[in-house]
Length: 351
Image (cartoon, rainbow, N blue to C red; front, side, top):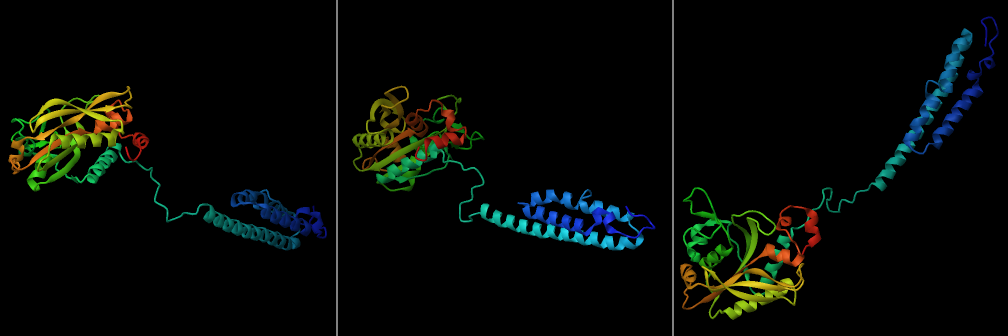
């Protein structure tokens, strides 16, 4: 250490020696060059520019120098610090540019790809099955017809030869004399088809229907049907049977067959309940009730403006929910309405 009356010798303060300062600059530059990324470079800053760095320690020694030597020593320290800061800034610029270029490559976004940040859903199997059945009938020359789900009681009851009060389980829309109901069957579309078309008529009406009742494994107050209607000269039960046999094989496989059991429907006569033989049922081969059918009652034709002496017709209705359950071995109808996307995906787009 120097004393006030001694001649100045910078070697007496080792940290302020030009060689020591040059070595500090060289060490810092070498360390900065070796840093692989901005985070690593930031971690090196305290060792070379922080409070305990060689430059900071050297600056503290300036006070021990004679007054004439302090200015020169201060300049040397400042020059060394500027050199280190310049080396740091240059390396930081290089690393930030390299990182930006790397991010552009690694995180490149193809703006031509579909937007897919939200999880994809799936088509509901009932919707897919309804569409498949519609395609089947369109291929047979039928037209797909639609009608309102809230309909006139006359269309749902009177025109279909149903006794006053409607079918059991019908939802009536308040007030009591509104004359409106939630349709309990898609036969309402049958009425509207005959009112709006001139025979020959070949239509199907897929859609949602409503009936009062408790929810359990096999029943729901909201379900789906496909109603079919043919009005033409010479239509017979044989044509109806051939149509339903073809549809059953298309939906349940080539080994499927149908049987008919006598039944009563107000809007058809003669009428029958349709059972389908399904060899691949989950409980083994068996007959499964599928729907109802029959020849359109002449009073229904007459109410809709069709002359029953010239034209005859047949109609049928099958449950889509039951068809889906039988085809895929589903034991609980509530699975169809729970909204679990895994259920929809498991059944596939074609249901």
